[in-house]
Image (cartoon, rainbow, N blue to C red; front, side):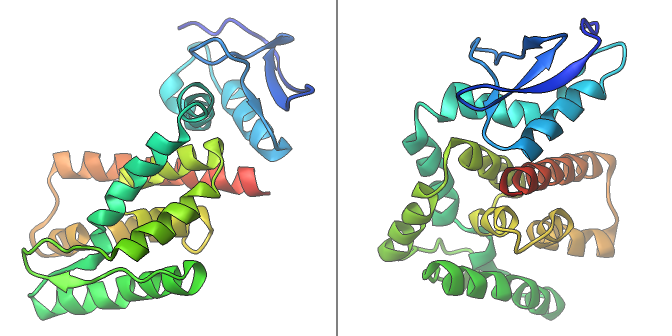
Length: 231
């Protein structure tokens, strides 16, 4: 759509910080006020609106999209968001190891083991690890502990985390990104480890490159979102 505003600002309200366009507050698709609790996040969202040219392109405003989703959908049903994220833990990417070749096996251990160790040290839960095609059954107590971790995330943080987890397919990598154990580039490298290994051997086709670019963009957006939310 055509850009319909000239000025963008951040305005303090009783409930939080609003982004205004020509003095009028931005609303979510469900017509709620777009309010966030911290100034760095409000400034980052306002920056997305300010950066638009003659056309307003929603795909270029990922932080706005995350905040709107949190307000319109996740705030009213945090339990559903938590259960979706826990489903990734039940089939945690980092727990499924290759049996061969030895170079890939070693690379997975080198990159993934420290993240599982971080999860245990930080959140007190250890996930089962296996190799081959058999499906792993994660310990019930581990999933309970992870549910407790997610219960400490508010709607905005849950939505940012979901953005990262859906992109990379790993709850552990998503948590490490959210809690600044990993950068966006490191999260991408960890989640795309096997694909990168195969590309090194056989090359990359355009479809795979486009998919990986999308993952990279989503992880970068999630990282910016969390940095602004936690500053």
